[in-house]
Length: 320
Ligand code: CO
Ligand code: CO
Ligand code: CO
Image (tube, protein in one colour):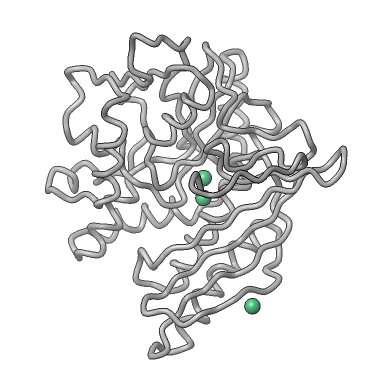
């Protein structure tokens, strides 16, 4: 995007200048529309489940901004030589998540492609002034993560056929869960900043938040929720290429305590699909947010760290 000529529109309130999850466009003094698109090749064998995961992942970028999805369009690539019933299952999976989100899929577009690809372009709305960007974290805030991590490692192990069904089942559970309730909780309580945790991994998305907000962060490894079995797979040498590239990219910005092993570093950089919300919330509102999350059935949410004043002499993120 940095190669493109600069174009501006005064109604584009959140665009490409920041690393936010979705764009926000003002349509009048009260309402902004939230726009996002995401799609990727299959990460699980079952086509219906793949559709569910991809749709949940696409919707997540609207939720991360504090928006409410209203309508979506399918984006599909599909091989000429595959049975169309498989595509039907993918779309059914996506439609089931759209229904759960309370929206309809209004159409879409399909092209022939050697490898299937599926995702949604989602449009949402929010009351102007209430948008939650990843640039609002404040020193003293607590960092809350609403889903456990490990889906990158586990789906990679799945492709290699070396993961047991209960570990895979839990990862699928995590990836197909909408961030709807978590977003409603954070809008209800009021928070300073949010991003969903996806391809750049927990620390990659945290780094975007600390840089956008001009703050530093401290993460307590022991408090980070992890899907059971993930570390065993990492110790067997399983890690997606994207995860290792994430780790390389964040290393210059992270200070690690001695007790943080190389496997822990890989874990914290693991590229997630349809991960949880990473929320920066004032200390006085933290307890209430945890309570509301729990009331809404999100029992894996945890306080994993804190936001600190930016200090140019130190790295942006401290993991202990
Ligand atoms: Co996102
Ligand atoms: Co996205
Ligand atoms: Co068309």
